[in-house]
Amino acid sequence: MKSKIFAICLILVLSFFNIGCAHKELTKYVDDKGCLATIEGNYYKGISSTIDPPNIFLKMPKAPKLLKGKLLSIDSKGVTFDQDNVGFSDEEAMFYPYDTLYGVIDTTGALIYGSVPEYYAVQHKLEIELLNQTTKEFARLVLSPNEPFAYCIKEGKYKVAGIKFIGKSDIEDIGTDLPEITFEVVSGITNYLGNIYVDFKSENDENVIVIPCNRNNEGRSAALGMFGLIGAVANAVATGIESSGLQHVIHIERDKNFLPESNKPIKEVSLTIKKPE
Image 1: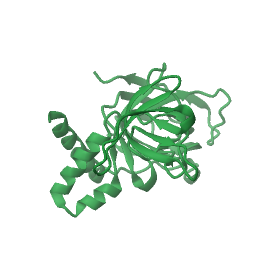
Image 2 (image 1 turned 45 degrees about the vertical axis):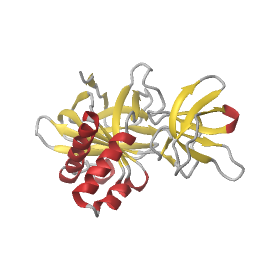
Image 3 (image 1 turned 180 degrees about the vertical axis):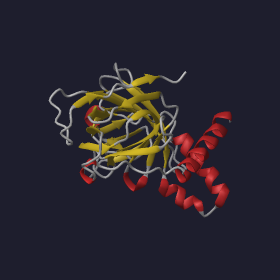
């Protein structure tokens, strides 16, 4: 019960945060080529499912079939999956060999086998909120999947204040319990952040940043909004339960042949990362 209450509080706080703190996106370099410093790199996003994890997709003659439920076990031959009850049905957990499966999404939201049907597939935009610790100003990086980025940015010491992964229909995976990530921006150069990869590695790999998330389903929120506070609380409970275990995994690589859009000298951004206690 305590965990549910915590989920309610957390989601409501996040909702108020999103309403009240929509900070300005940084200016793209292409729109202000006279700026003194840029932050640049590339963003790559693996394919995820729009459905709250875990779930599996079965091979079917016309189109893959979605099953929601619990992923009980995984081995070299297949997976054991306990499908959610539908109506009055009470389905027993079943073993599904890999040759019957189109794709498998684990409890963290990672694709661990096969692929995601196009209808359910999503490659999130990445939104990073930054706090300039020198000026106390907030700003946002908004990165489109599988594209380079180049933003004008003021010099100073920065802290990552928030991370969101934005999918279809404005469904957002909002980072919680973030590690403390800080870095410094130097004027007169290209501050090279690197190639940012999301969901290409697992949480057990080395040199990764794991971002636990809660899913904010805007469509569901709008539907429940007509019920006022009761609807908001119901949505918070549903979101907290469905998002349990959801996460995205980030790793960053540097390309020695990177060519900056700004044509300024390059300095690699040094990230200091402190994991939450």
